[in-house]
Image (cartoon, rainbow, N blue to C red; front, side):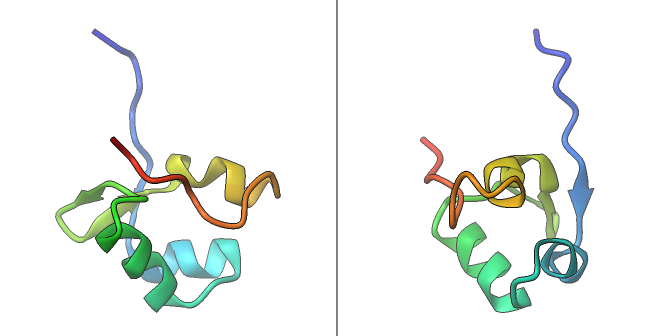
Length: 61
């Protein structure tokens, strides 16, 4: 078992935090780059984007 706890936020909040359009956040979810939880996304999956190590999150298995 893991102690990981997602930070679930609506796409509009995530978009404002990372400086990208809401459509981009939703597209990443559709592409499998972000995990969707009842219309919200896990902000922690965007750490590499936020910290400038990646332009977009990697696709999830």
